[in-house]
Length: 153
Picture 1 (cartoon, rainbow, N blue to C red):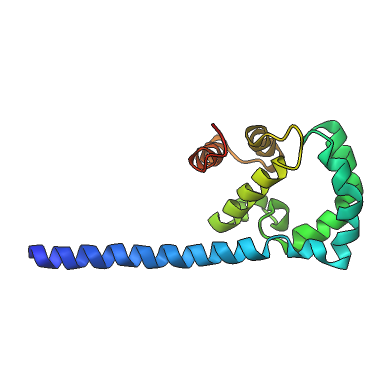
Picture 2 (picture 1 turned 90 degrees about the vertical axis):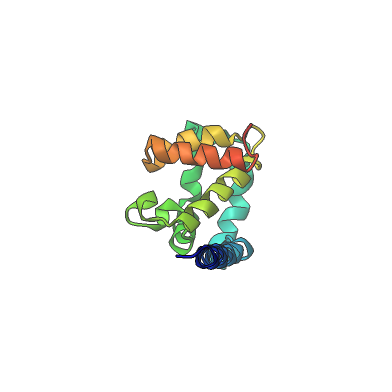
């Protein structure tokens, strides 16, 4: 190939990568706009109104938190069935999730930590590794992503 052909091929490749990243970004933006819309449905809203304030006072992953979550379970089951950013949506949990599902999930975890007085994304990632059965590699990916986003220091 000549230098000009290499230049054209490289520019074409770089532009194509950009197009694909824009496509991916559009899908992520759609998720951002429509995140958790089902919570406003009659099947979920009553439960979230009734139990969210209780959960916010508890430490995520604690025995008290898990006990309080039992009251919300029927509403959560409906929610999980309609939202792909939850591992519970899938038969094989997190193993069946796409990268886009996982990105939304990580954003959800970060936002959830901000609803608790003692919320801690680092602790949530650790707790959720046991809860959802993901390995040290995926846990590290979550940490590195959170650091890159300045969510952890």
